[in-house]
Length: 92
Image (cartoon, rainbow, N blue to C red):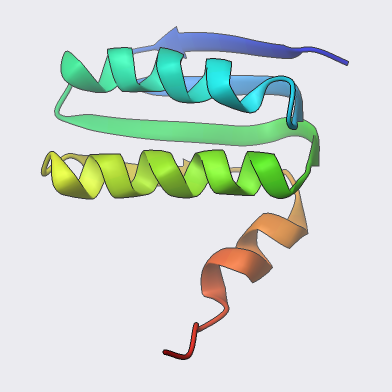
């Protein structure tokens, strides 16, 4: 399934799969929106699958937001693996 990206008032609504074939488009589209907004919220409530490329894309967006001093949030139930990955501490 493709990824549908809709935006409304700084919230990016995603529907479908975030995977190797859709991740780069998500990053490009969201970075463009981030240039014109103080904050971005990603709603993953209707995301059915997130693979490693999708998690990497969301991490990239998070880091881009931090670097540009933007508020960045991910909301929705979406995929539990994403929350697990973001909450896993990384040892140096």
